[in-house]
Length: 86
Image 1 (spheres, rainbow, N blue to C red):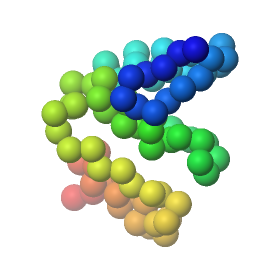
Image 2 (image 1 turned 90 degrees about the vertical axis):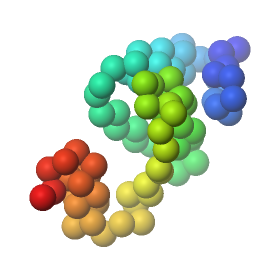
Image 3 (image 1 turned 90 degrees about the horizontal axis):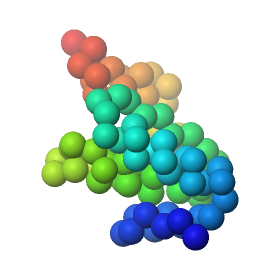
């Protein structure tokens, strides 16, 4: 069974292992990672793990529930985070 210590992510399938390999690989680069999935599938846990594997691990991790935001605020949030709003 594959486990990422301290991240509450646990799985053994080939698909899970590949997803975790990609997560760790991408976390070590300077790219934006989009994590999608159904409610309760561990998206925030995966995001926290990516943050911990990244160069930004010492900086704050701020989860955003985009499903709770109206479309115009989602765009504003994204643009502000990427420096493109103002």
